[in-house]
Image (cartoon, rainbow, N blue to C red; front, side, top):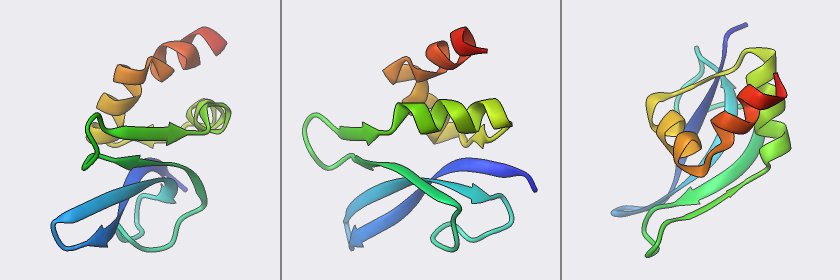
Length: 87
């Protein structure tokens, strides 16, 4: 089972916020997920990001691949560097 770290959209029209989830790559964007590891709210200024870093690093070690957007967010927060050091 290939897993992805992806954003799951919630909120009203034109007012999105996202849950950061671990999901099977075959599941729909807003469908079934394995674990919720945080949230991201881009509508706030500055954008709000709350992640359980230990869980994200654990899933990266297990082979979960972040999507392009999540990859940019993780790089910006320095989490990918922490995961590389932990490995």
